[in-house]
Image 1 (cartoon, rainbow, N blue to C red):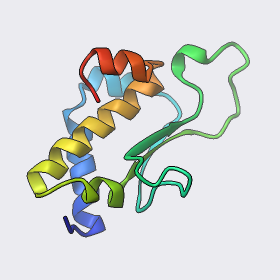
Image 2: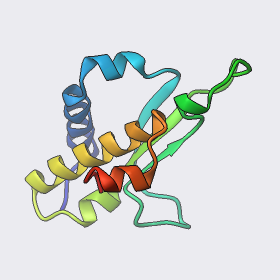
Image 3: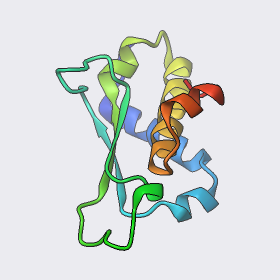
Image 4: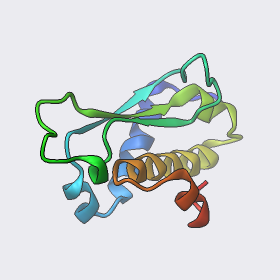
Length: 115
């Protein structure tokens, strides 16, 4: 599947628009980025949360750089057949990585059907 970066970023924005505002309001010190390629050590990765989940932050959490949610454009496009597939995969990936920000593990996401 081919799609330019601008359109892909629009789809990420649309996926974020679908997240309930109450959850977005609870997100703290996190940035969401669209990145072309996943890290070389895991080239098929669709998204990645890097940081300190809200559930792990203590009294000493201060003055740190924002957590990062990276959504990897080329790996997502590589597994999709058409734009509808991209829309679905972007939405799943965005929710999955936001869940990590809230301290929800991959195992729990799997149990909930978000994999």
